[in-house]
Length: 435
Image 1 (cartoon, rainbow, N blue to C red):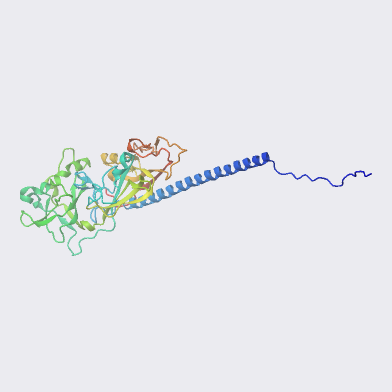
Image 2: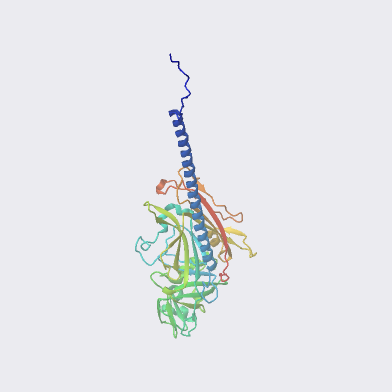
């Protein structure tokens, strides 16, 4: 009889992951992967925002450097090589039809049409030129800044003739007795070296100051006065059809004439006319900064800080305006003045206050505030209703808050954009600033 013997072999139990354990592991892995994706997405967005901020700041600071360079040149030989002008008056029928003052630096609220010599494209702008008005009512939060100067020293005529021409006593007899005031004809001792199409400055001592007029030479010929020749300045666009009498209002506003005062023919006698050469090749230029709108790939438009250069003798664009910084939605300026001649800025004023207070010769610095928006919107962020650049404590001049548009009223929607404010102040360094 056989008896069973205990087996010397044991059963090996092989264990693996159960279905539940596998599912738990998969869930943990999935959660970890999602967390990694969220962190990666957050880092990507953060990097994009940092890149956005760095790009905007870099462009804006580069624009400020460019503005600083133009400001440092403002006023350079604006009165040519002769004595400095207290005020320089000009006229252009294409720019509001009113005489205006050309200052080394000035500002005007947007939108103000840029003068051009062509009507191609939109009403007053050549094809491809951004119209400042295209940015709509947002421009109420921006200034247009103007810096006027000569690019190099103006040279007298090269044929040996004098650079200055003296207005003769026969002024009152010009144009059959009308006088220079209404006829715009200036009898000169000599017209040698002058040419039709030249730009000139007429320098007139008035009220203890030297008043200058931008004079286009449209005709040269004999006068009705004995033994004199004359130039005529009337043109269809660059001089008033009523003659110099049209400048009375600007002279009163500038404090050169008393309230209700007016020029007389006697004021012209012994005034000096300086020939600046052909208008078309004049090296007197005005640099303009403003906020423009440029088309983007999405079919809309994007705000840009734009720089344009004008011929200051004809008010025509020398080249198409160039965008210098993307995302700038507001450009404002306050002017530091030294009205007490203390050697330092005593008040900050808006440009209209500078003009109305007759402080245009007392400007010592310009304080800029630029508001920029992000290049990409952030739907998880809601912008404040307005952005207020810090205003200086000295003087009544204040920066206006920039109201963020939310897409209503035909305006763009910037309610999910990030904004930043950059301020910088530059001294007016040119020593040839008019007094």
